[in-house]
Image (cartoon, rainbow, N blue to C red; front, side, top):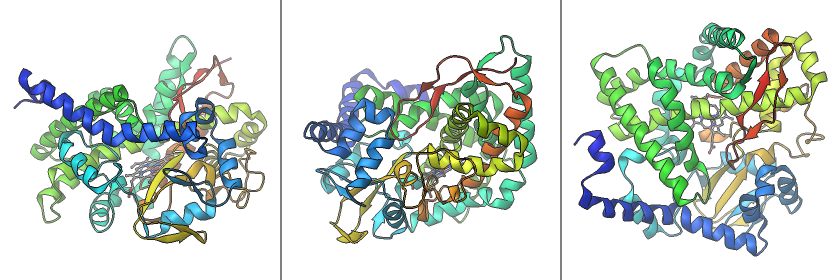
Length: 447
Ligand code: HEM
């Protein structure tokens, strides 16, 4: 069967495929969406934080409200925390798993598994690292971790600088002098770096950005059926793209991460083809879907705080800490989910087995118990690095060092090259609940 056949299928199979897709959506997102809307109508604060547009657009006052009610708020369907101590405890605890069990019961979860196409598995479906636990998690993570050690990332520093310079040359040569900084720089830099690490050829990078942007919708709680179909089709396209790319690298391996993963898969580490594709897709996607938000959020924040930007221009050694403060103040990943494996406690409060807990990383990072005056953006904040923007425990972000390097290099180089950079129009937010960043950031680069 060719890949096109797989997409459209014979005419008679289409209604069956559509019914499977609709059932999978109901189990994975539809029931959660319904529960959230019902809960919100009944005043459940955790549900309102997802459903109400104003709370989605500016989640920070809601985090304060949730924290004011205690370290752990147990709502009708889920529990949630915006406390730094409780979030840290949950993320590091072996009594909580990053569970893929999204349907309400075990048998419905089994049904969901049977309906899931292995060529459409996304970032929150097993065997994605984000959805599995030890020992599988340890085995797969080990195979990719070597490419992201501090030493490996330091070795990339000159290349990241060269890429940033080249992209800014292109912007400078462009006419007019107004550009969308997200497209031209904030997204292009991380996607180019992660594509080079994985050995993805240049002509495939732009189509891949679109695929990952749409596939990332699958992170959203209570996703609509229309968006679910868009995300699933994009994920399927990502798998097709990776199948072809993996076949190419099997014939002609390079010195890149994916070639090494393929060698491991074909060797003694027994990585299945599905594990290989899903891991590669996660690393590619996570490599830029988040860092784009770090760079975009940072530019918007610094343009709104010109005194702090001036100080960074004068004292460039401050950029590393400025990156930490942006991660703390406006975390690119706002929330994640854990499920308890047994009756237990968090911050001394009881939690029953199977309880889903929304860990509000963006809220923990505004906890006044750890960060004095948490709603003040301060690039010189002494303990900014204590944020949980990269999570904690076994799922701690694999790309944290890379993101830090890309963020600091991108920002320093941008403002050195264009010291008069200014907003030129109204930035547009992405509008998503989990990932927080800009879709468009129009700027004028010269005087
Ligand atoms: C500012 C940029 C970034 C942010 C804020 C970020 C944030 C996160 C967070 C919060 C998690 C854990 C989620 C959880 O605990 O449920 C995570 C995991 C991960 N991140 Fe990042 N990330 C960033 C950049 C990157 C980059 C550049 C890569 C490139 C390789 C990457 C690869 C990964 C991977 C593979 C995981 C899964 C790790 C695991 O589950 O073991 N991230 N990231």
